[in-house]
Amino acid sequence: MLKTKKVAFLGMMLALIFILSALEHMLPPLPLLPPNVRLGLANIITMYCVFFVGRAPAVTLNILKALFVFLTRGAVAGLLSLCGGMLSICAVILLVALFRDKISYAAVSVAGACAHNLGQYAAVSALLGSAYVIYYLPVMLASGVLMGLATGTLLKLTLPMLHRLRER
Image 1 (cartoon, one colour):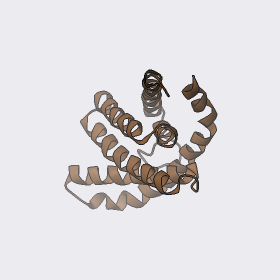
Image 2 (tube, rainbow, N blue to C red):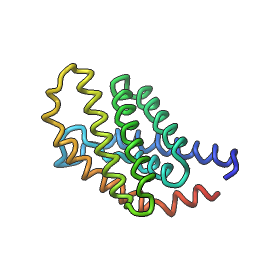
Image 3 (cartoon, helix red, strand yellow):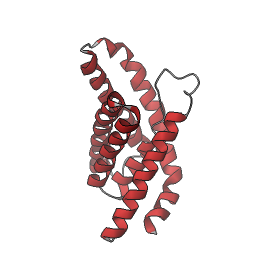
Image 4 (tube, rainbow, N blue to C red):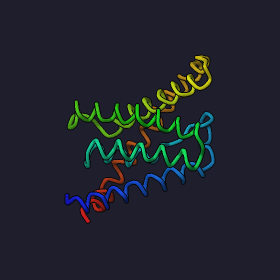
């Protein structure tokens, strides 16, 4: 991919991340799910970048997403996005590096979602100066599995569209 074309493509990916993040934040809570559980739609783009564009661009997009969250929702939300996002991207990169052709998008997504929730758990524990939030950890991990399956499936469904964007 030419450098200019790659920069333009990554700009489109960042715009998609911003749009998906903002859209998801505007949606009402999903019925029957615990408070603050979200799908993680922006992670579809991040995973796509790890699989098909490169690790460094995916990490950069993740950091820029956290900055966007910081600017639009405040410092705590930005910190949670950064901590969860960085642990998630590390898990996704590691799994893709180890098992690239032997692992499903759903499995990578579940691992990323659970890692994201663990990163957020660590940040909340540090902010509160308390480990009492550990009682919510099983809920966070279970929701990570469910939301990871959903975003992994959505990644698989949107691959043709994302590939077409990349080819232009």
